Length: 223
Image (tube, rainbow, N blue to C red):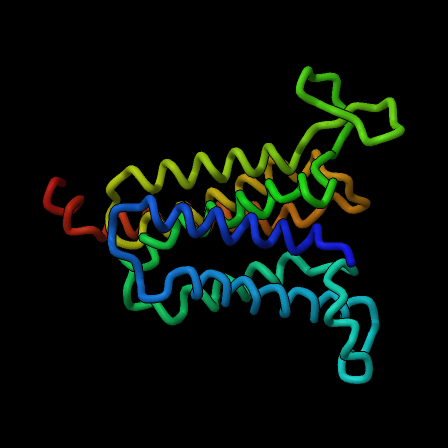
């Protein structure tokens, strides 16, 4: 049995756990369970969308839903996971803010888990830190590690700054979307990936952060 996908998932869980342990603020009850649950729901929705998109009836072929390696629709997976995580906490913006660094850490862990799955490489590159696939003379960008580093930077930033309620969560959305948008051209893809979706996420996150900032009593009092 091949466990590389499982190791990548465990890397994401471990990164989220570490971020929660290192963040010196109160988080919602069962924070790690919330993140894992949202990710599982998103994964199921993304796989379901991918199965339907290929013309397969999931009711007649339920086993196809378990073949995650067959593809997951990024748009549906992201939207469903975000909704599953944020909806129960929609009236508790501070709780969402406190989860934001851990979510970015989990995403960083997932991208860093490419080392277990041997899927880190993207477009060809001559940079000193690029490397090649076994048996290949073409060196390539370790694009998934780029994403992991960028997401880790976002996690560290949001862990250390004090922001108005709702702002950190919105910035996390924008940061994650922008990271994927910037690194997407370096990934091997026939259609270029859903860059439009990542761009929309980055813009919406920034707009939401701006609204949260302007509505904050802190900024209102200082204006």
